[in-house]
Image (cartoon, rainbow, N blue to C red; front, top):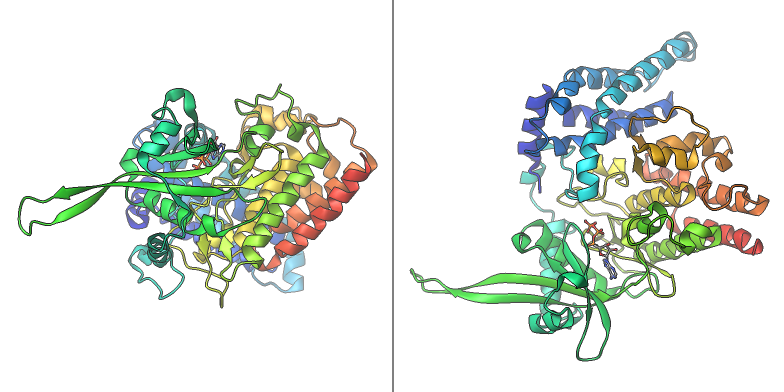
Length: 513
Ligand SMILES: Nc1ncnc2c1ncn2[C@@H]1O[C@H](COP(=O)(O)OP(=O)(O)OP(=O)(O)O)[C@@H](O)[C@H]1O
């Protein structure tokens, strides 16, 4: 995990400005802008991309490269300019507005293109990081004193982890497996049993010898037995077993292998060392939504996938996941925030029903405030709620935001953040000059959705000519998604409204057969 303070200092040295502070100020001002709201919002989204990008510059592989460092010169000045511009939209008289309207539009265009020139560094970075799916925590926007803030009496993530540790002690974490049982189930974690790798560790398919159950076993990386990954393990085993929903992955149990070490020097006590942490889930055999939409092996784009072929299936998937989120928010005494909703964490079971997975970043809210102050910003590139990243208060609205991005992904077949030409061609095949600057899905699609031209952004791989009902259903999904990704959490729809709209969209898609 990045230390907020150390990181800010290094990035500041690199760019010559308090980039984190400036970005925070721009985003804050964009939230309260009275004029040019759309332009301010667009600028805030672009600037936030820079915030997501900057932490990666500290990687020893990346930082020394001149092709990364050189383009960043002057970033501080551009951010200051952007801040001034957004601040100038806070309040103006009508006359002043009329006089300056044209100039303001030019200024927005100018600043936007300057920001884009910094983002040119991004394809290079994202090539390294999205494929490795490494650092999921972006502390760049946290106030510098965040790491030294005392934990509030209720609701902080560390307090949550303490509580979770207690829950584990009380045996609410599902079945307790022994390491030997899980080693036997996976043929001693043989290479041919490996399904994939994530930030937490390696996932294996296994068959429990006791009852023949087919399971997925996540084994934490050896060098991550403490710190963030241990927290993720505790969050998952404390929260997930208590959740029962047809669209939420089922956690069967876990295994913590410890050994005792005797200290030879005084005070001659034994200490327990954790050697292994593993989680055992139901096995879902049909890959993830991300695999199907973006053709990730073993589901290459040429394979027949119901997700790729049918609008009805796509809307059913969204509806299932929205119901799971509604359950988390509305049917738990302390609402649960998943905090990492993205298409990789939506898995398909044997019947192709979607299952929301990966609860390692999840937290329970304080029931009175329906919020929690976590100790870090979690999420995956392209899905993180800007408002939460700024306020460092997690609310259920952050899952609505991330789910809105997933809805746009399903609608367009494009990634949450895309930079490859092939992605651009997939939908906007009318564009002759594909944009080489990385693009944010919401930013690219919203202008079309807002003017009722959803057909221009629909995934053409399904049907080159959608029917009238498919268009109507897609429009309902798109309009709902557009509201979910609004900058201010309070402007987003409640999850129950999202569920109702998806039910209506599914009804339309079903009538088409
Ligand atoms: N219960 C499961 N059944 C089948 N496959 C699974 C299961 N859980 C995870 N996988 C697969 O294992 C791989 C790694 O999953 P994991 O959740 O560790 O990582 P991720 O979600 O891709 O990344 P990260 O954890 O960093 O967000 C993915 O391809 C995922 O689809």
